[in-house]
Image 1 (cartoon, rainbow, N blue to C red):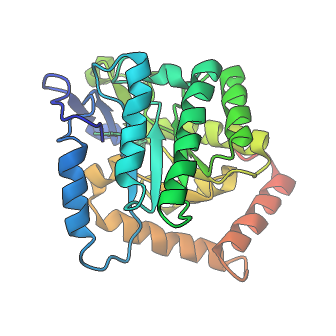
Image 2: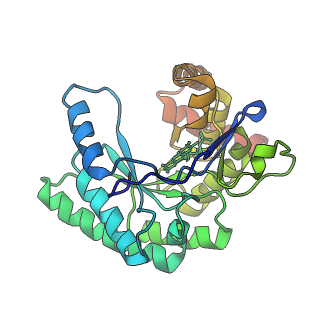
Length: 284
Ligand SMILES: Cc1cc2nc3c(=O)[nH]c(=O)nc-3n(C[C@H](O)[C@H](O)[C@H](O)COP(=O)(O)O)c2cc1C
């Protein structure tokens, strides 16, 4: 979501690579703007829902740097009392300058404003603390990642979502659509995303929950995310290739894997599985 409606980049802007279950997209946050989405979200919430709602917020394409920070604030204000959690997207490759917010100084400027606003909103909404996650790119250099995580810990961010799509093209990918400009997602993203999750988990020592995303298309992929350090998982491209039933398949598959550890709950099974992996070899 961006505060103002925008049409995004010219079409074509989404490219499938069916053989690899991959996608390259350069949509550029095409959306109807905050006001319309807020109204439709309120309507949706009139009927009871069993699922969580996360709202992912970004900046408008033509917002200057300072205005971009204000764009995030507007998103936060609009959805603070409606969403179960809010994701600050500073990693889309399709909005110029957006990813610079991942660099230490800019990240700190942004996060200071966001967390101050969160404090004000918590007072406004009877102490409600809507969790805020920061979504990072798989392409961030290790030193920038370390700096970002340091700031995230300092400002007590609630979660890190890792990762967005990549501007890299892992070697061995030959289809012509890989040459398209945009973010690559789906199966070929999994190793990059997993490496990032593992790094974040090591830097934070597990102190910030990680939402693992990137190339999950079955229960094995999802389980692997938990093994490298994710606390929750998400997927996007697999919905395109496998349809919505993929979610149920993964949930059932994960439960099966967890059962083998005879643990009290899923998190305990993951912990045991991670310990076992440590003894038997590297995660990835
Ligand atoms: C068509 C498309 C649109 C996306 N739009 C957004 C977006 O608006 N905000 C965002 O944070 N990520 C966006 N993403 C990235 C996904 O949320 C996800 O981080 C990425 O695709 C990796 O997961 P996957 O391999 O399961 O698709 C988009 C991905 C695709 C394929």
